[in-house]
Length: 354
Figure 1 (cartoon, rainbow, N blue to C red):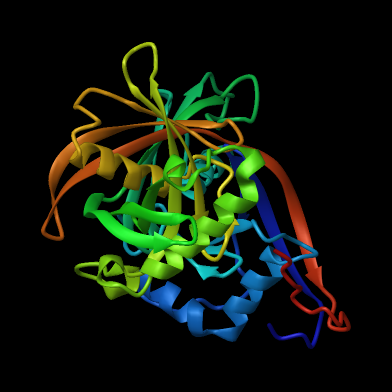
Figure 2: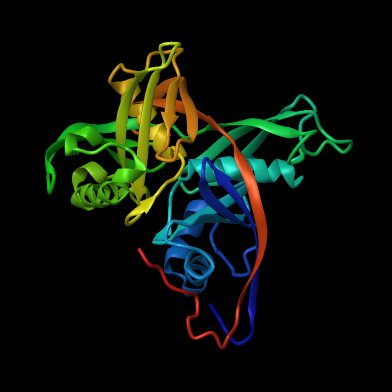
């Protein structure tokens, strides 16, 4: 970023299931492109946009597991706005927890007017396509805005993602913890799925460091293989993360109950059950007949937060049998910031310790 004068950036911060999401409503740099996908390509190569990402994500203003997004214009009038997602290692193609946070922010800030029915639709363009969210509120103040408590309280947010599908199943892989079988699926980003027990682990905080290590190992072992290629848009290629999961049996209603941790980018850990990762998980379970029509996946995170998810449509996408997944969660505002970069600051846009 240019540093001839002090740079200031305003953000609104949320968390979804414990995972942070830092919203930049008015990025102070130009992000060129006709679509959000094109803007992501621009941002990856542009020093100013990438510098803004590093400033807000890195210490001392962020941390190694920070996440956020720059608000952009939509691809066309069919969406309310667009978003460019970012994390400590770059710009991602999809983010379900961030989309849920953005929907809460859009309604609470008045950017999208609350529907008097109590269910407000928010449509967002993301690099992997167009996603729809339904924000359910209870009550409402006189101007119809959804507040943060009392009247207008958000009771839930449904995230309807792009079509998701299984790419490959039971891919053999030799790891430092033994030979394993990995499923690969797309849910707006491509994920590797691994049973945590198959590498002698459980999805608990006690195994945190080991989960990160094997998550990184699996991702990088598969990232440049044929299994990581998106069938129609190479900008979406690459293993975005590894989902390690525990099977917890069924809930009292007979729904499948799992716990997962998503290790994405290069060792970053999602504190939530991961929105796009849950969509990818839905694709695997549906393809294997483990998530029947009318059933709901109860999906817990490593910190105990929960999403629920279901299939709302079956179709074909990119030549694959696919599903349209719906993930339900909610998000809460944690604060607002006005960050500064002093031109004399010898740490510049900061640093990352992992």
